[in-house]
Every structure is written in structure tokens, then in C-alpha cells.
Length: 77
Image 1: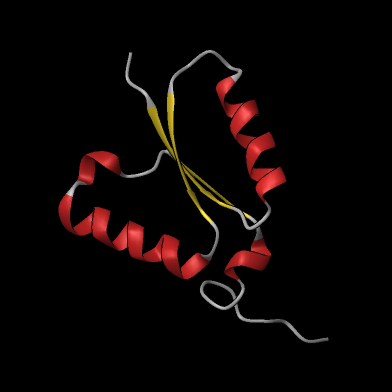
Image 2 (image 1 turned 30 degrees about the horizontal axis):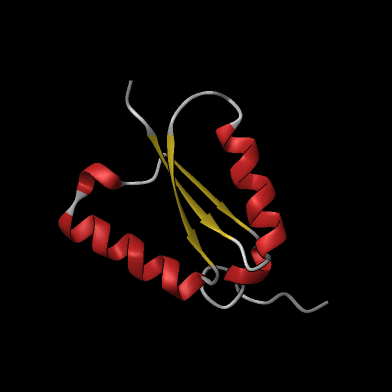
């Protein structure tokens, strides 16, 4: 059985543990790569795309606050 690659971008270790536990409880193997900030995760993704396309994440889960400066412009109302 092929394991799924999960990229988890989460700056709260408590939330990261809960998410990892939930992903592992489904009984299917998954490789979880945890990053605490967006720029670090982007570097990881860029390296994968350049070198090892077999490790492209099947799922990317991010909390928006960790990515606000990288992917999404700050919205001011």
C-alpha cells in the first residue's frame, strides 16, 4: 500500500499533534512533514519540484496565519 505524503504547516504544536493523530487514526500510512511557517514550507515544496517529484504532497494543510505574508495578501477592511 502506498503511503500518502502530507504537508502540514502549523505554528501551534498542540494543533499539529491533534492533526497528526487524526491523520494516523484512519489506518492508512502517511508521511507527515511538519513546518511551522510558510516560507520554510515553500522552500521545501520548491526543492521537491526541482529534485524529487515522487514526494509531492497529496495533501497540504495550512493555517492561514502562518501563510499570510507568503500566499495571501493581508486584507484590511
